[in-house]
Amino acid sequence: GDVLIWADAPSVHADRILSAYGAAESFVPCWMSHPTTAPLPKEPESPAVVRRATPGDLPRLLAATDLPYHSPWQIHATLRLATRTNPGDVALLLALVDDAIVGRAVLSRVAASAGIYDVGVTPRQQRRGIGRQLMHALLRLAREWQVERVTLNATPAGVPLYRELGFEEIGEGQTWHMPAETLRHPPRTAAVAFALAISGGDGIAGMEALAGRHLPNGDTPLAHAARFAQPEMACALLDAGTIVDIAALWDLGLETEARRSMRAHPDALDARRGAQRATPLHIAIHWGDLDFFEALLDAGADPRIRDGTFDGDAWGWCHALGNDEALAILNARFPDREAAKEGIHS
Image (cartoon, rainbow, N blue to C red; front, side, top):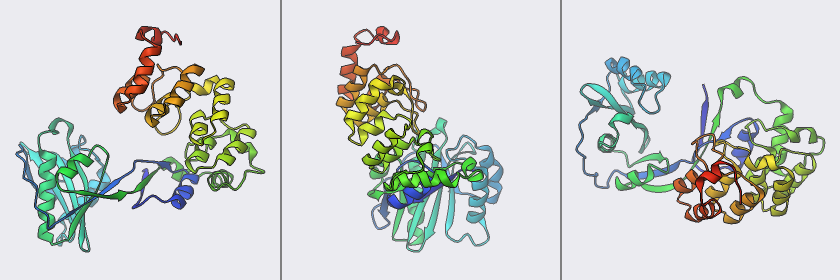
């Protein structure tokens, strides 16, 4: 299967090596911590019963495919660790409603701390207090284990909930996703060397032929240069006829080159790039960069184009990200939304 690689803190060195071999950027984990001496949060009312898993729960766990992070091999391994004769330092907690498994969470002890993993509730049972109930049970168990603190990593959406439960943010980490296909068919040595040359600013003499290809991790060469803040490398890539990536040029501060590319390569205005398959307009909205946003519209970028992950057009991204200024610009340029749908640009 695919591999998720973790670092407890951002690492440029690891990023250079892993990306060169085909790993793509994944989410940014927010590490959070809760001392076990702190008061427990109030236990919420919930329709679920929370208990530790038993070996007999295996068939139902495997059948609960709507649980987040469902993975058969991981279920087998975790249940075995949590229910062996000497359970040691792993606990698997289940939440049940009408004898059906609707939630699950793992607590793993290492020395004087314990980590929380795989907290998930089935979509139909969410917003009923079951996730909080699982968290309360985990914190209570950590106290019984007499560890000093409990840690977890949170997505941005989960941070407010964990704050309410008494967790404090202690820093951001970094993750990468390595596809199984890349592991089965590793990139060629020349492609790896080219990616490392870009990220290190070492020059691409003798490798210009690779400038027109995507890198092993899917980046355009210009996006890779932007990722590692290499503007001189970006200029060399442009001279070598690389794939035009307008957002990468703008990100590097190469505004003149970006505007020139908007005119010379109109197809690049609406090209979808990166893990989210987003256009430059989407990226400008995400950055909150109104100068970039208006430059793209002036050049003819199409706000109707939808990204490849969330299926949102420019209006949708403005609403989702709360970018009211970009939304006002869109509405002023396209007072009749139907005109925008017909591709009429002011």
